[in-house]
Length: 457
Image (cartoon, rainbow, N blue to C red; front, side):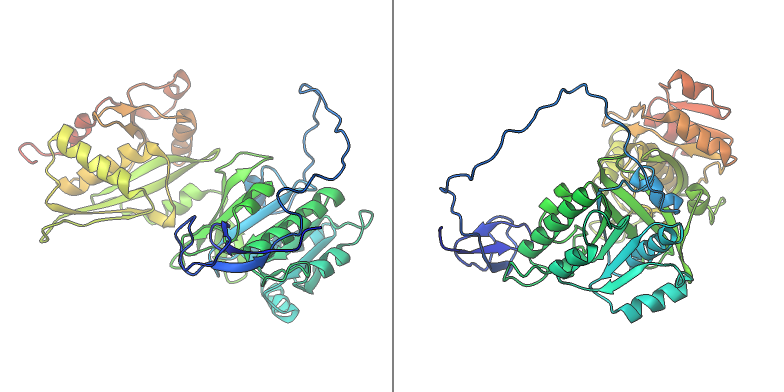
């Protein structure tokens, strides 16, 4: 058997090198290489004996995955309808965003419904978790609680398949360590090894597993990327400390749609579900001022109405400012260029500020028309109709292209009392049956001609 060797592994990207260096040769990060002991079997070692694997036809009947309801509707929505036994879920988010609060509430609701639930805390003592449970009003729930960071002790506590719990929560995976490795907790090797062991146990025992993951300064889950590949679902808990609203977003889900969101409100007694996010993001609208347009967007399968706020002001600087919150800054630059080149608006001497109300982050390209309307409204000083919504993708030629889920967007706006909608000229037959008064926009210049006074440019 070959001797164990050492390698220097980057804690950011997981790349390895034989010699230490100040800068990782793979990702370019500084001071991230840590010495770790690798296995004894070398790359030239012959594989151990195995057995042939039985093959199955592709068209075999597959039953739907069973679900366990967490009793939290927004969490079930993001997970695809509930927790799947034997599945592994990775939850990431900024410190203090409410990850532990949400999972403790879910564990308490499941335990109160008769499901065996175990909560392992590696960052807090059991007394601290009890204080949080008391504040949340769930201290009486029969949740098994332990403060443990040893992987061997956790696997021993979980026991065999006969007594497997329905839900296991690990808070967090970066605090665990395996005695089979000599590296420190939180390193790439420890996170990878502990995650593999826990996921393997969940698949074998049928327990639903939830792992809490730390995030880096860039907002990505810390540790090797292989952890996100080995789990079934990856959820990000988003939010701004200045707002009380939190968004749970699915970026990967093998048992449901990706890009689904759940909306929560952080209160003194914990996280409360928000059943209608559109009313939440439109609650404090100023219907008199210019520069505000309502965008009908889609987050997964859920239509969400949100206010796009723009401010265009003359700039005293040689290089005007462009500030964006909640949207892609590159896409804002594209919309500004189209307004100047195709619609004749001179915005190069103005500061431009764009904000998505409520702290929501928008990635839907259908927001182009709403952003353009808000920019033109602020530039001209003319307020938009408060009962009108906007959606449509703007091309570089200035044309307004159709987008998906038009009927769902219009139905959500109609439900909330909006009377009209500015939409792409090409609509599906199902969208044309909407009760809203539709204003078709084929080119962005049609919108600017309507909002800009004669002679202003």
